[in-house]
Length: 300
Image (cartoon, rainbow, N blue to C red):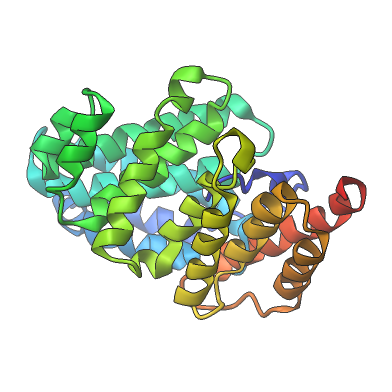
């Protein structure tokens, strides 16, 4: 999630869920590594789902690094260039990117390393799936846009866009990274063109933020950003609290609409965060909403 880091300053109690990892390591040490390799794609997907449905950010924050290392080891053991490796690479990209954006606190170097790894995994996964797009990554914007038109699977494109956005967030002082923003937007545009409801419409949240970064007078498109935020809220049936929180943070503050800002945050804090696929991000969104309520008193 773009710019979810303001909600991370408060440290949470440390809880280590070691049982699952111990069981997996036991299997590996027993000589059954091949079984883990065959099941790795399913494990990564199921694990990602379990994280999204967690109500405890502290457990996720403290437990996830061990699983990131496990995924790294599974990827390291893959046969280079094998197309079947792509799902694990994309799943690992998502988990590394999620940790970088949500649980590294003020450690910019840590976030930078994890986001760079996430982007590398996402690129490698896409290159195994789409050779033409892989070639276009090193070419100009027009060529990149043209190659995107031939891509038909939204999931690898979405994984790449999210990882790239996370990398940009962690390297916001790098002008070369900022120059890639049009490619991120092009990827997200292609995702919603192929499947508007992909990942519960989460791509629209990213598009909402990207179009609300600058005032209209200097090239921003805040009203388009508002439409994207509202589309994300609609597609999630109102369950995506981060869409409302980021709409308040980026759109409402950009156009200096205090009434909208305060109303969105009040709705987020009054909502039940539990919803399949949204529970963890909703919990984090409520933490961010509380901080925005406080800082909003000085902002407006």
